[in-house]
Length: 251
Length: 262
Image (cartoon, rainbow over all chains, first blue to last red; front, top):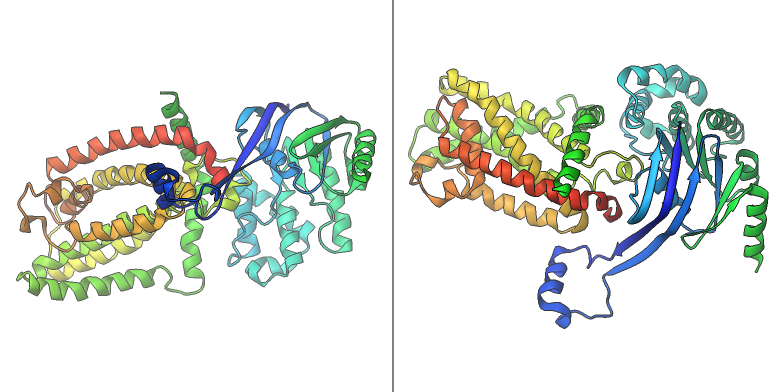
């Protein structure tokens, strides 16, 4: 049902400073050349966030993603959710995707909890009827009760997280992309959240989970990718990859 | 040609995601009503005050009667509001939606449609002024008003390609919105919003070379019971074809890069 093939997919991000973002300086650079500007002050820096990554994922794959900060995990997740088109190489992604990279995406703080459930559902690709259908499920899981009729600016950050998590996990995609979302909220909620994620992971065809917590990788995943400096270092069973990753960290 | 096809796919996909932009645009307007009962109508009210205030002064400056001048200025300001706001806000169509763009893979044109739809809702609010104005000044509305809708659609289709180009450019160059705002400000004074086209020669460059003059013509004249000039239609149709070809090719080349610029 779902199928993913990455073939030498690379992402080169151009990072502009304020000078590189101005049309004025771009015109100056093109017309006057280097004459007026200091050549060392490069206003554009290119970062290779992903370097020729190739792998294939099929139905049933539960893939963990490990690597230090800045290793390209989130960039890879964005490529997998079709948000970043590779700047070279190809990424073929078949299946309906839901990504929980930023839980609070598109929340309107002045709107009520119920309004936000509907807005967020539509962003996740549901129609009006389907959005109405998930309301009872969200009510039950978030346990926010009467707070759902209040504007969400009155919520604490924990309550906001509960609502966002409840809505985002109420839809069942073919490909599920998670970025460090396990273990949200207070202890009681974290436990229920994990149970719900487990159910969701089981229903999805392919799951990606980026995490710094080796225990959750071992519990949820049957395959693990290790990223370092934008390059895919290793692809294999969680135990082997985690061992190699840990060994690399010690050196 | 391949580039244009890429642009077409983006635009068609944007219309396909109508649930998304319709919901977002609706919410943009609802948000203004949330903290106050009058909501968006506050701005409509202030526009009405401006029309009557400016009307009194300019009618005597130009030496015409209020009954003759007010419908011209009223329609002009309301329509100019739609055009200038849509162009100015198109610049931030992508930069304002960055958190959504970075998480959901939707066609870029979706976000432009949000801007256009929002401004149409606001325009509908401001339109309320006109019947009142026509009643007060005794302006007669006749069958010409049927031409208003095709005129509005022609203008919107033109604003869409302008906004599409500006949205992509503004994501890359962050000083474009300020530049555009200044140009739109200047355009206000060289377009027949305050003055009447008949106060100039018919072939004055301000009326021929300034597309805003044509846009005003095809929307305003039907409202006040006149026929827009054929030249205005020809100019807008020509711009529509050329502009969309440029915008589609540009989008085909650059729209997939937008996410990296945010």
